[in-house]
Length: 163
Ligand SMILES: [Mg+2]
Image (cartoon, rainbow, N blue to C red; front, top):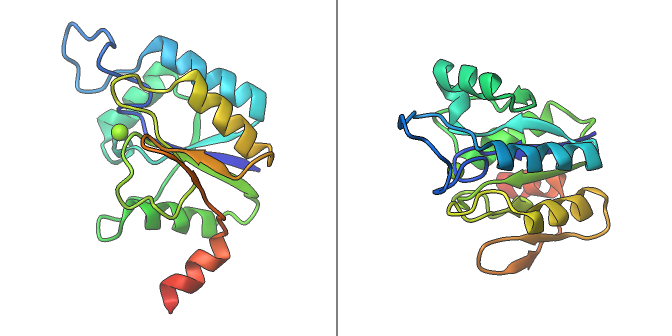
């Protein structure tokens, strides 16, 4: 199973997303369509890591806009976002490849992060990078400042946390 941990703000919306009513939760139809293409090409499943998941209204909004998620990360206010994802992964051993798509990189340094700019949201470049990564063709991830090579192994991450 392949999984994408998905942020929404700055990924499925951007500064150009029309929002005349200034809704607190908004999804850009064009960016959502890019995401759906990515899922069709990879067979990956979406797990929401976005803060939308911690607000019942945000969760309803994600469903309303048709964001195709199958699960959400646990909401653990006392730990980092990274740890929330690792906890979800540890309960889902069937996952053999995963990425994080998030416009912010705080606390995500050890994860395979694909980081669009919040001014554009998801891009073709990010989509193609995720496709290659999930297919196992590369371990290169895409961050705003540089392409970072990352040998990611969930088990070594847990070991390092304990030591
Ligand atoms: Mg964001």
